[in-house]
Amino acid sequence: MAKKSAKNQPVFDYRTIKSFEDACAKENIDPTALPDVSMIPEEFRKPIINAYKLYIIFKAINNGWRPDWSKSSQWKYYPWYRVLSSGFGFSLSDCNFGRAAASVGSRLCTDTSEKAEYIAEQFQDEYKEFFLYSE
Image 1: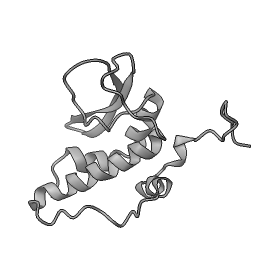
Image 2 (image 1 turned 180 degrees about the vertical axis):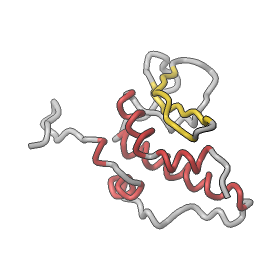
Image 3 (image 1 turned 60 degrees about the horizontal axis):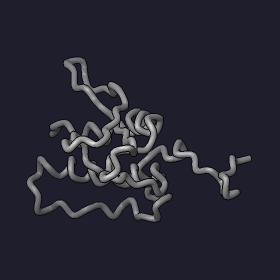
């Protein structure tokens, strides 16, 4: 039996989102309707498509939570990767609070480190295509 919230509603388990398609199903988005990037240079097309995919994934996993950047007391977590000579890997889940600088897109954060770690591990391929140059 699913856990219930204080309002007697089933509690959403973010771990049910295992793919971009799962995220699209939750958000009622057609996963085949990707942004038209035909006017963009070839080398930037995959990163833009994968940024779009990550936005949808974060939206689905956040389940209605939205970062409030005017509220420094609200913790915001995001995956932090390292690119090493041996490859690409998740390093840690970080938190940003009340700084003016941003090292990730403002939509690519969560309200818990557990969610950020899950996204980092589960969606590593999308991050690779977003961050790293590939042909």
